[in-house]
Length: 129
Image (cartoon, rainbow, N blue to C red; front, side):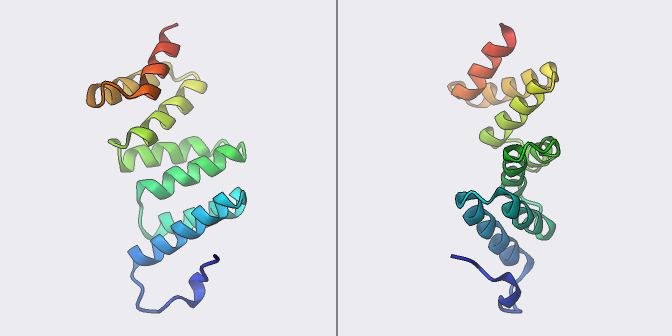
């Protein structure tokens, strides 16, 4: 389903418009159209700076092998540092770029909140080996 944002009702507020762009991006990503999804997630972020849009945008850029993914993982983390999935993806990104201590600190914060969070445990084990 393609949501035509331009023909959306004029009474749509920023939150609603942001969500419309976000879900359009989700659909494009599911259709394996990461490049097009990037624009939808950017549009969503521009209207409402929410972690989900930044995280999905980072994921798309990562799929496209675009170094800007790291910036967007950081924005997602800053928007919601308590989201363990977004936080661990940011930590993994930093680890791949040699920012080991920062990655370790984020993974440890996740473990402090969720002692059984497997991805954070695995990253810490990898960083300690």
